[in-house]
Length: 401
Image 1 (spheres, rainbow, N blue to C red):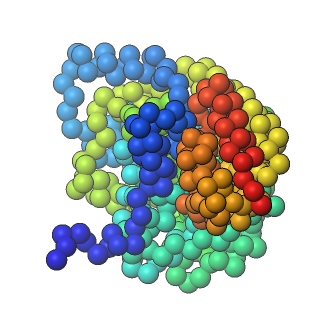
Image 2 (image 1 turned 120 degrees about the vertical axis):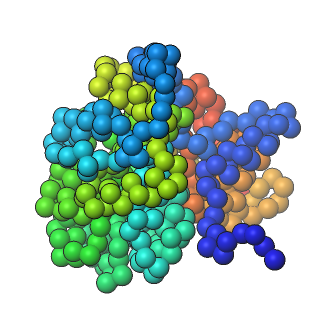
Image 3 (image 1 turned 135 degrees about the vertical axis):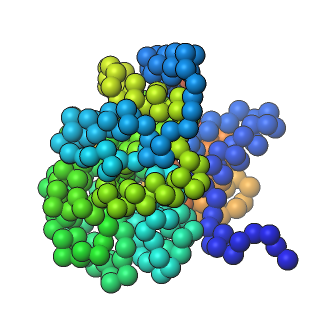
């Protein structure tokens, strides 16, 4: 007899968290390990943000808030969507949750029936398919190859939609590939979706402000306004403002979906903590200079890693267009033999070898639905990244074909 629900049998723990835990366990033995498994900015949140939360908590009681979020925060979010994305939302079209992941979790719980197909272009964020499976959804994962810039094309989208398709997830800039969509590319996808009114669209735009090479970010909602009545735009303060631990995500979408998501949240965690909502409001309404400073640093780090990996013959890396990851191709390493005589059968074995031999923690591409690759986070210092790339190069050089 087990006390564990059967629905969990098909759900895997977070691959990036598992890699980070393995790195911590190896480091506990005294080995110097560079953990590039988790995507977490190494900057402190801008001072005015923490100051706003501290001062508010010092002078007033922090009570329960409405499940959708405080009116003040939702007004700040509506203003952000208008100012930065050209999107108009009423307050009852906006939801606040404990991170973008809970927004997505709530949306799926509120909308997915057993057997519904969730279209997840691969490579995808590791939690998408696992959350879908929790609610009886069926992940459908068409591959978006490096040759296509890791982007979903209209042809692949059309071929993937069935009468059971409930959601299409888009993530831009992408975790793990860094791929960004232009307005024209989003409109081409929108033209396909217009023919399939049963399909809802979730546009995960959490890395919106981390975009490189002078590109301009375009929200899916702005590119295809005719689809707004079935589009949920997801964002948050974790990445742009270095506020991962504050756990504030938000979304805007159709009123009936937002209302259902509020019901889910009211019966689970009630709401986001009041001080965190005050901090998020300060982030959205306050000075934005440090957001640009963070982005510039991430772009320098991207350039450093791209240059370093280019010097390792067996690896490939298309320059990420945004976010703070490098999705590194390792096809040439499959079948290679390690110094201990083991054959690297797949990218899972490659990632394990890099941890054991190079003492660098990376997440295998298998976790993102597209192999053979491995992902490293570039959200750490230039010095650490230089050392990590050096270690990866040394480990690769020890392999025999």
